[in-house]
Image (tube, rainbow, N blue to C red):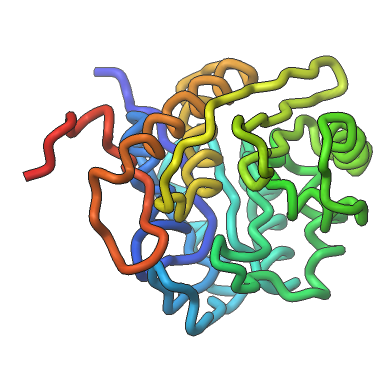
Length: 272
């Protein structure tokens, strides 16, 4: 009997279930991998926003990492919310210790509703410690601007320039997500030192986009765990996420921007 691929998410918990650890585990399952988790923070959160954040102590994050890696064969790692410098250091040290591979880093800084999730003094630690460890960095336009110190990108050329800065900072590949632009299409830029690829999808008219960044990065980790090359993993994940967004109005979750439909390709068109 062959073993199922295993992906690990290292991120914060979303009590509303639409983003963070909960979205990652749903994405893993939807993309047919077994999901494990290391929780870095608890949030009091729903579709309307975040009302509280409780950081997990760094030594307990280390304990979670040691527990998971000592027993499970981890084929890929997705990193999400890391709000404090000690947490960033604990995660980095744990990944080095356990020789983690296929690391996808989604540098979560604010929620979709604008609530901050990363301490200001932790940005430099993100850049100097974790970015050089990432096989893929997946910032949105706002996160890319923050990490590079550039203004918000308003053109493809500016996205390319920011991707080059992020590559020079140590990331092996960068996926800058263009979903926050005002264009009718969503254009994401996948760039490494050897490749440049634009992935474009039609913008979908829905408010239910909570957790899109978490879901995409964890889907990419899933496909890397299956053994796909980076370009194919990103393209397949983007196609799956587009379907998840397009199907999100089938759900009726919360009073604000709801989650994407992670299981659209498994549950079919009817929800009883």
